[in-house]
Length: 114
Image 1 (cartoon, rainbow, N blue to C red):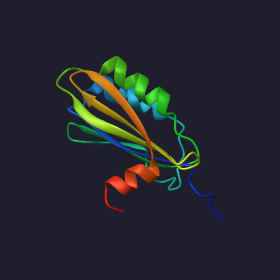
Image 2: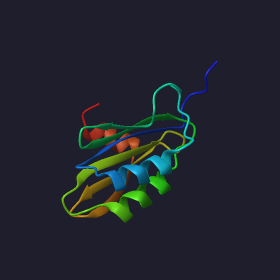
Image 3: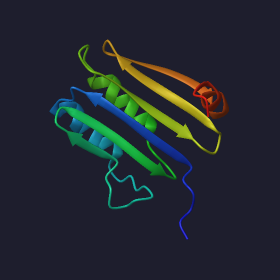
């Protein structure tokens, strides 16, 4: 029986160049999610997508890679849902910077009308 995920991570960044993509690949290397045959990081044209559900995700390493390689023309976001602490942390990517914000999931669900 599979264990319930403790975290879920969804995000994208574009345009994503080779240097940033390689840094993201290194940051997520060894990550194993619920669906072992689906990679946590994929490239779709000039966009990098992150999709993960599992027990552990190296969010600090991914954010560090973004901070080191983000350019002013890149944009996107990274949502980290900590299901154990019931909290959403969003990393908004804009103007070459990473802007984190955090809220309890109950607040997020109430705001979105769920």
